[in-house]
Image (cartoon, rainbow, N blue to C red; front, side):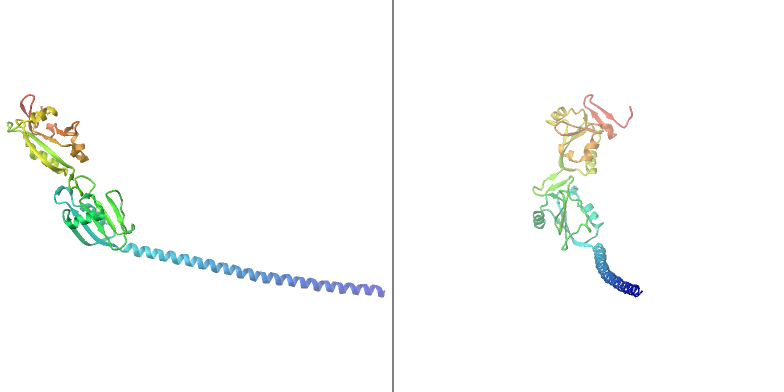
Length: 301
């Protein structure tokens, strides 16, 4: 009996020790989890702080950039505008359209100058900026020119030379070659009259007005009569049968609008010369050299 009690007592003590060990193990596990949880929370918190700092930094930089852009967009580009105009080419224009296009952008012209192309100052500027065709326009700014302020479609005649200078050159005829002072698009015109035809239309005034409407620069004019020496050679060379008429040198082909319109009233010969032939287009009187008779084109046949 005593032996059984002794075994029971030992068993109870063993259970008690196991219970204590189990409790101690549980406590250790809980303590470990608690410590690691706190550590993880600290790490997560630290990560969140870093992310927040990064986000705030990005937001601040983004806002500052937008503010800079707003301030930049409200600031105008200031500078000096200089025109170089060839006085011997009144039909070459004055670059006024280019000036208007520039003023539509965020540009303020502090000073505007007009220089005669033959002046020493103009020649110095032409050499400095490498200007090849006139008239020309130069915009120069002390501040760096930015594309956000000035939109520029660059080509060989419109270009930004550096960050402070833009040059525009006349690209379409008529214009003046800066190096030779010759006019591109300057044409020679020969008016052929018949003095014996007193009722024939005034070829000089009518054709000259037509050329002026197209902005054509006439550099040389000749007025001849069919009775003059050597005029017969012209009549035969270009098979001219109706007078008065006009012969224009090949340089006029540079005026594309005129060339297209000319197809309705005249011909372009093999040597490039333009000859007026369609008399009915003007509605006046002319002389038929084949019949020797005058024809009134205002009368319907």
